[in-house]
Image (cartoon, rainbow, N blue to C red; front, side, top):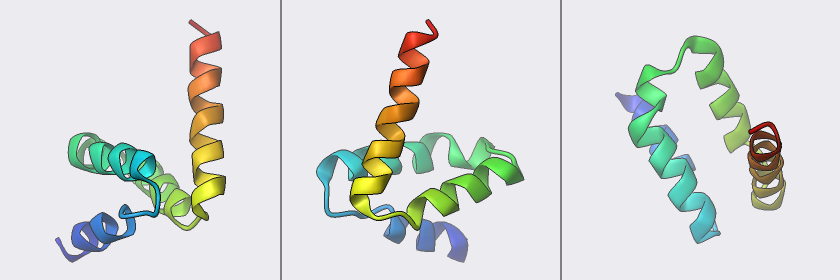
Length: 67
C-alpha cells in the first residue's frame, strides 16, 4: 500500500492534463497491470512533464492511426 501512495504522489504533476491521465490510470488500470507494465509506469513517472506529455501523445497518435 505504501508503494501505491508513493505512486499517487508522483502522479501529481505541474500540468492538469498529466494529473488527470496519470490519476485515471493509477485508479483504474494499475492494480490489474502485470509486473512489466507496472515497471513501465514507474519509469514514465521519472520523466519530466514535457517529455512525459510528448511520450503519451505519441502513443495516442500511434493508436489512432492503427484504428
